[in-house]
Length: 82
Image (cartoon, rainbow, N blue to C red; front, side, top):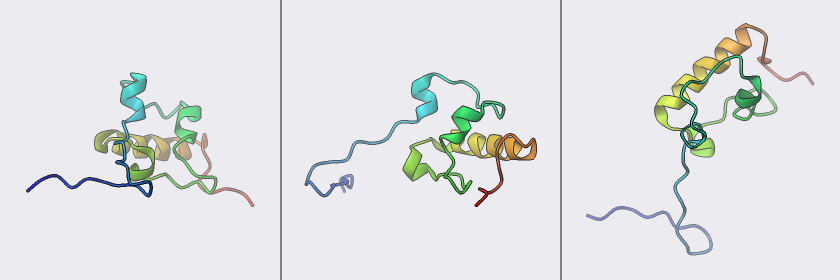
């Protein structure tokens, strides 16, 4: 049984996404760093999933906690204003 390969529409293979926090060398995800957290939130205020951002499982959990803390401290909005 071999590994399943992901093939894109061009017939080539997809490159696996790497965690942006590991590549940047960040050890901690801080809830006060609004610029970094806003990269992982949609315009509506939803947290982007791992399959889109490429964040590892453990870091995604920490990212979720940091976003929720920033929302409670009113650094990030819960929802976008229309």
